[in-house]
Image (tube, rainbow, N blue to C red; front, side, top):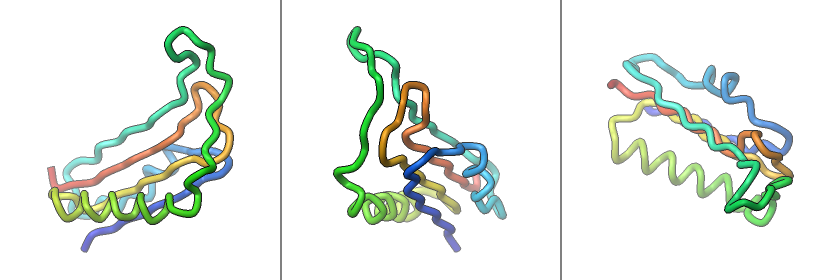
Length: 102
């Protein structure tokens, strides 16, 4: 059975806390990705990024991506979280943890 968690976080992402949601039963590996807001982009200082235009569709799109991953690869567990609202430099925007047999 595949275990998928999709979270939309308006305040903050806690990558380590989200890692605890992976159901590692049967998993031989967990791969993680954390995307951060850069402080500069092409020499321009970035004060923040604003994520609000897709809030209604975001959970559905992320769930579809997780289901596609489970169907296409040997994945047993997925935790996918995305921020909304204002995200400052160095703060996590997206967090993905994937558990698989190897």
